[in-house]
Image 1 (tube, rainbow, N blue to C red):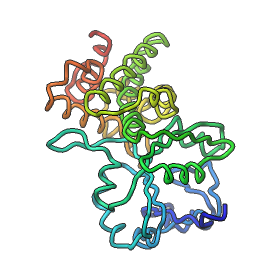
Image 2: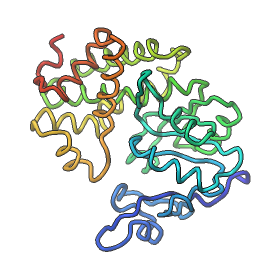
Image 3: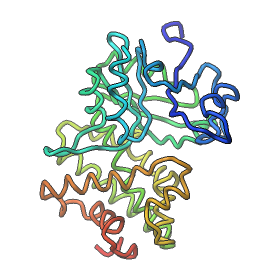
Image 4: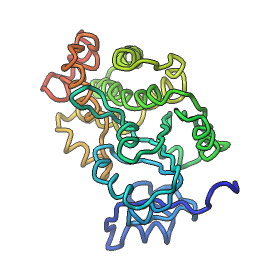
Length: 313
């Protein structure tokens, strides 16, 4: 499309792989051999090791990284000189919190860079997306024209994008479903069948809705029936890294750090971090009793409660 630049600069954290720089491997072979080895990237996606260089004059910034790294990179983006009217799109599935309660990652980006930020979430396991297998995604927007531009940018025949004017609902669905996925993984590790997992998913969806209603006004019920809601929840509870690692936790008793290192090849586990953050919010607001599943998943994950206790209450 004429309105978009052809080249996409992809900031890539530089690391050595078999004696070569990862960015050089990507730009030569068009394969991210460490994190997505089975997919060929388009030649117009260029790995750039310098964040300031990648962000300079950018009209659209797409954020896809563990949210704990955001504070250290935003000053470099701001100093790089992004384009006037630059818009952001967050694919980050997590939340933060401060003394007042929940802080959305999109709000962190808005405050740090002074730009409008939309959110993309959905039932989008990376390996399947990379194979061009049909899937859907949801973009939540605040500014309609930015939502329309981003939909045009991302929508393809095999990656269908719908938009909703509900950044909060889209973003919270993407974060909270990872907690439920830990419960689904515990089910798998315990050898429970489909009935139990279905119950965990249903109860988890209810607690996701209740959390959104308790801590935010204006989240739309319809958002939970978009790809970012129930579809992403189902996908994550049957696949994805959080389910896989929770199954290993239930089977081996290893700590999360070891499981992450053994199973994720340098990627980060978001569900455990989100479970901690949600627990802190619930505790500060006397909300623990409202979320028995979220609370039990936290206790199993961090307080030594046996995994078999998952369904007791």
